Amino acid sequence: MAKQFPSIEPAHRAFILAQRIFFTASATAESRVNISPREATALRVLGPDSVCYLDQTGSGNETAAHLLADGRLTLMLCAFEGPPMILRLYGRAQALARGTAEYAALLAAEYGGEEPPGARQIIRLAVELVQTSCGYGVPLFEPAGERPTLRRWASAKGEAGLAAYRVQKNARSIDGLPTG
Image 1 (tube, rainbow, N blue to C red):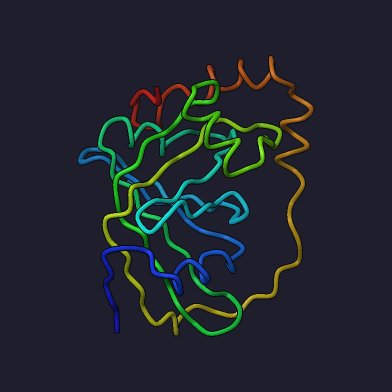
Image 2 (cartoon, rainbow, N blue to C red; image 1 turned 180 degrees about the vertical axis):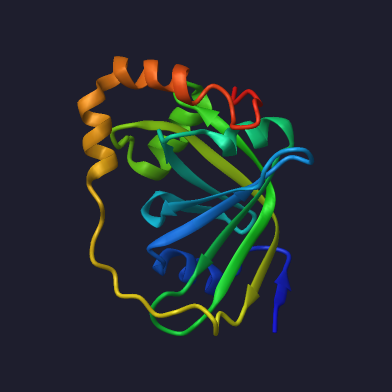
């Protein structure tokens, strides 16, 4: 049975910090729904009503476009090992662009000032609702390890190559929305 909470409770925080992957879901009223997997080491709980994650350059930038146009974002975490549970964080978010003061402050405070190769923005979510559900249908998986491909690709591109790639591939969503 699903349960709803107005904020992130200590047990939710512990669950979030124990996961290895999370998913983001965003859309506008007229766009396609975008769902993306993210590495949980990028996710930080800032407080009972706020989380953020360090976003890396990818094949698109749908989340940023949807946030600019609409602002809604859902994060979902589910237990692939241990006791079953699904946890969703609903709210409104903003993309903090690399190079801004807000980005720098969160990077310093939450990530020790360390950027992985390809860091593009930090997404900050103001949590409006937390929902948990049983997760009984989620299969058990054992992690085989992290994939080094994205970081190797970003390192090989270098700063100038990544900037050019973002202009070419990340400036607009698949529905033509600007990403900011």
